[in-house]
Length: 150
Image 1: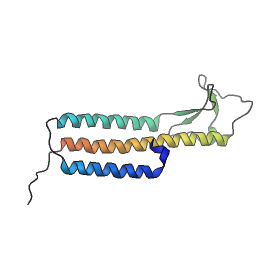
Image 2: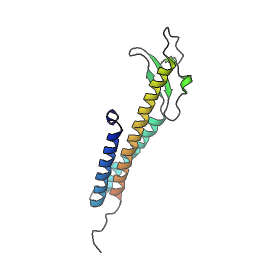
Image 3: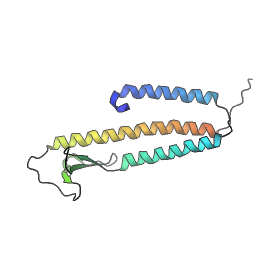
């Protein structure tokens, strides 16, 4: 949903998350179930890292038609298919399709670029969330500060 509003909402969420994280670290206390909560946060961080790896490494294919099995394989965010090598294929056979009305190469390039950009943006957002959860997990494992003043 963040991608619908533009870049400025990412800055607002980053600021809000930073403020909440700072406030939590400043007031943290050792609780009875700190290790359980810290372990739960660590599991979420591992899952976020796995999803980031999948988002960056998995190959993307975009449907060409609203109905039908014709697709264009765009590659992955890490290794995209070069623009001059994009071609329309049928999903089952992976063979190029002979088209009566070919789709312009610029349109295939635009569709793939948009899809790969969206995938990369989602991976970046997930990395930010994983970072904040990792900070939270570290707070659960770290011993609390003494509240004595010098």
